[in-house]
Length: 141
Image 1 (tube, helix red, strand yellow):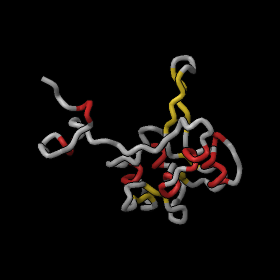
Image 2 (cartoon, rainbow, N blue to C red):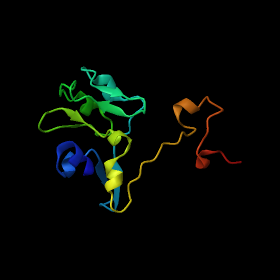
Image 3 (cartoon, rainbow, N blue to C red):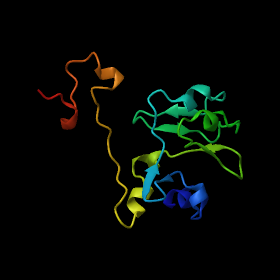
Image 4 (cartoon, one colour):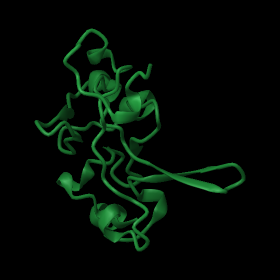
């Protein structure tokens, strides 16, 4: 909810850029944020070219260019692009410019920012013998 305060000026879970997925009769609570997809559908389908990737890899939405058509939200495979109920423009998690407010505000420390590890199943590593893998991803004899 810290991001809803940053974006909308008030704490509202329905306007947060993070959602909580409840599994197994609400025994598990999993935070879900934008994956910053390598092949981002939202970026591809935006007719206004309002969605772009910065050098740090984070996908951003330019509010000035967004026309509010909702195609990005419709094509997001994890439903993490939302439409602002007031201005009808798209918004999503943009990692708070590298310092996620949700991580800082989490009172229990349950949220953390992690960097993805390349695995042998990643498409870019299948043919790369030099790729470095996570310890659990190595084949054992």
